[in-house]
Structures are given as structure tokens and as C-alpha cells.
Amino acid sequence: MVSIEKYERLTAKVTWADRHIHYLEGLCDAFAKSDPYRVERELDSKAHLFVYYLREIKRVPQDIQLLSGDILNNLRSALDHTACEFIGSGAGAKRIYFPIVGSLMKYQSPKFSRQIQHLGKPFIDILDQIKPYNGGNDLLWKLKELNNLDKHRLLLTVASVNPARTETFGEWEKARNDWTREHPTLPFHVPENTRRFIKTSAPGKPLKAGNELLRVSDSETNEKPELIVDVAIDESGIAEGELLVPTLKEISNMVRIVIGKFC
Image (cartoon, rainbow, N blue to C red):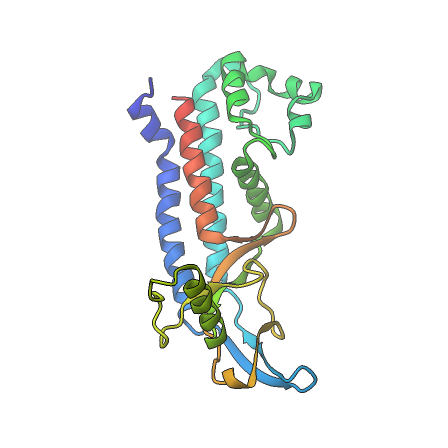
């Protein structure tokens, strides 16, 4: 049975991180609403199409990077505190921390078994359930790797991404025709003067000046796209193009779940 008092004590840093995530979400929203990009258009005479491309994109504010690092550190610390609380003084003078490794092979290796044997069988039994390695519990592994990068390399790398843009009239028309063909007795549910946001072809690709956004015909030359801009983690091999705030929320929720197993 979970001890509520113990759980609340061990998740205090998670709660603190969640407050930071809420504030971070406001910073990311403010950045998105600050018109951080400029779009221009040029004619592709060979293809007889107009090309909209990104002329300029502002850098993500450094406060977002700094706050993200604080959040990761609090979440990682909560796990280490849980390990210390669970094991108590039974491990002697050995340094106690919550072990997370890069693969199942490393987790099952004799070397790693020797490294964690001082944690005791009850702790290791719970670890086996949690699977704290890449390919087992990927959120815990991302927490470890991102926190290490932020601690040792100064700042977490983030980038602006474009998960969605407004549809063109041609895209709306195609959607209407597809709907009419599949539902001949029902009217199309999107009025002609309404433009929806649709998913882009590369929603997690970092935005850079010069990126092509859209190609349109002569009849759609007034269809300058409106972009949704968001902030994503841009760490190769760990979290590339994953939206920052949702990822941190998922990691925070996982840390709560893990702590609950030790209470």
C-alpha cells in the first residue's frame, strides 16, 4: 500500500518541476505569439508555381533552455532521493543513486549487476519491473541523458518547429471533393471561407532561414501560409523534434509513477 505522506515527500521536487513546466508553457506560448518568423514568396518559373519560404526565424529565448534544465534536474533528483529513502543506511557508505542505463544488454550485464547489488534485492526487484533503460522505459532514459547533457554541456539544445500550417484553397477543395465522394448525402463540414490548420510534412524539423514551406499555383498566390510555431528538443539520438513541454510533462508523469512503486 502506498504511504501518502511518504509519496508526497518524495514527489515534492516533481510538484516543483510541474510548476516550472506550467511557467515554461507560458514562455513557449509567448514566443509562438511574438511573430518569430517572416515568410516570403518567389516564383519557380520552370514549375510555374509560387514558393513560400522562411526568410527569417528568431532564436528561442535562452530562458526556455535554462528553465528546461532546472526542470530536468528536479525530476532526476526526485528519483535519486527515492533511492536513498528506500534503501536508507543499509548500503553503507556507497553512493546511492537511481540507476538508469542505455540498453537491456547493459542492464543485464554482470558489471552492472555488481554495481547495483548494494541496493538490495527488494529495490532491484522493483527496478526489474520499471525497466530503467533505453528500450524498456524510454522516458526515464531520456531524463537521464537530457539531464546529463544540460549539466555538462551548459544548455539543452532546443529549436523552433512548425507542426502545422493553414491549408490552401486547393487543399480545402480536395478535402471537400473527397468528403462529397465518400458522403454524397452530407454537406461538407468546413465552410469555404474557413482555413484549418493541417499537419506539415516535417513537424519536428528545426526551422531555419531558407526552408521551403509551401508551393502553390497561380490561382492561390494570395494564400500566404500562417504557421504554428512551437519549441522542440533538438538533441541528436535522444529527442529530436519532440515538442518540449509535452515531453517534459510525460517524463514528469512517469517519475511520479516510478516513485509510487517505492512507496
